[in-house]
Image 1 (cartoon, rainbow, N blue to C red):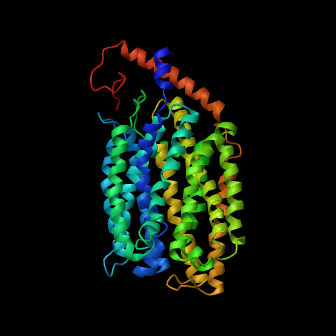
Image 2 (tube, rainbow, N blue to C red; image 1 turned 90 degrees about the horizontal axis):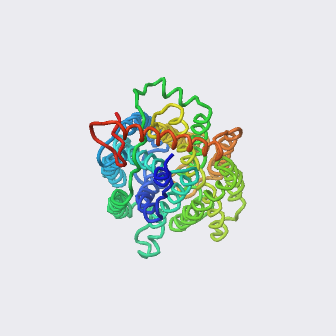
Image 3 (spheres, one colour; image 1 turned 90 degrees about the vertical axis):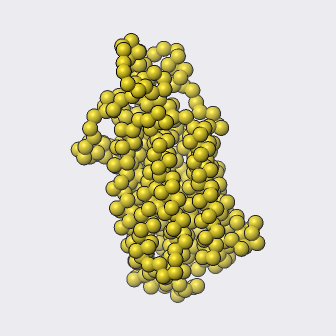
Amino acid sequence: MTDATKTSRASKLSIGRIWAFSSTGIPSAALALATGTYLAPFYTGHVGISLTVFALTTTLVRLFDLTLDPILGWMMDKTFTRWGRFRPWYVIGTPIGMLGGYMLLNPPAGADWVYLAIWYLVLWIGLSITTLAHASWGAALAINYHERSRIYGWMTALAPIGSLGLLVLPLFTHRTLVLGDPGSFHTISLMIMAAIPVGAILMLAFTPERPRAVSVQRNFGLGDYWAMITRPTMAKLILADLAYTLGPGVTSPLYAFYFGQIKGFSRPEVGFLLIFYIGAALIGGMFWPILARRISKHRAIQIASVFYAITQVSLMLIPRELFSLTALGMVTVGFCVSAFILLIRSMVADYADEVRLETGEERAGVLYAMVTTTQKIGASMNVLLVFPLLQFIFHFDPKKLVNDPFALQGLQLCYLFAPVIFVFVGAALFFGYTLDESRYVAIREALDDRDAEEEKAMAAEPTTGASVPGGAPATA
């Protein structure tokens, strides 16, 4: 490999460019909080849709939506434009997600499950496009094993700023704007919709797209998907990602019920507690890449899993209405949770390079589509797992300010212990994981050598057609 090639491939993104790339996650996190944690209480308690109908509607929509990700991933892998591979897709997805989010947070009087289904689907079509484009773009930006953890670490650390901004609104508005208060949803939705284009513009304007690797792309069919899924490394990543989504994901639609009815906190206090949980990702996003550098990514996620179980169950031991100690507990839980998506995404990027070395083809978009699909399956199943159970077994009523002790016991079991089981399953899957740093270094060196030889050979031959930055011609 030439010294010039080494220098080009070894260049790291500056902190400023990483911040620009991560800035789009700030309003996206705010939208995710409003349409995730607070959507179920809003539609079941205020709009009047039952727990089971809400669960079935959102689950069916997400199951339909997840079929889009493999198609989108394949299309992104085949995309080449003068503006890059992922930038055009992000531009397409942003207004779709904004429209769905606004309509979902502003239902008219008499809105029913049909209204919920339509705009929930529009929201997730937009989010599918932007999430997959952002994750795949991040993988393409990284140039080595630890750089990926660094990029995804900053993405994890900066995104909660958007959620925290919503949660501190009561402090700066004399409690006239409170996330979770139906009367505040319209104003909050307008704030989110105004912020989303700002983050997108910063990312699109200041984040580069590295030249697409030279490779010969062939048609990619169902058999190829199955072959990738059944490879041991990817199978572990897919199943672990599903487990880690189901784990903390189960707590999201139950959060407001648990801390309001079991722990006895007011609606503003419930929001303030979430500040500590989400804010812990600011620390976790910096810590987990450092730990992964020392002991490898899969060991770091196993350690995070064990401490998550301890801290999650410990919430049960904290006395009712004791805000300070509960806030500390939320910090420890959120700190552990921040490791899961961060490290899984980084490991998928490593595996994408292994696939390219073995097949000669760029499949990052397809591979990320596989894990975003499992995340959607997990996010779809969480309400379906707990809401019918709460309604029909424990007779929990979301319209009541306080349910009876039997219903509250069921709520506590679902909130505290179900997530721990799923997280332990995820941790167990990484025993025997072989794609560690030493293996990745060998893969990266082989790829760099091969790419340098291909670039040298192509530069020596006359070519026609469009070219990518750096001199390599576009490939189909």
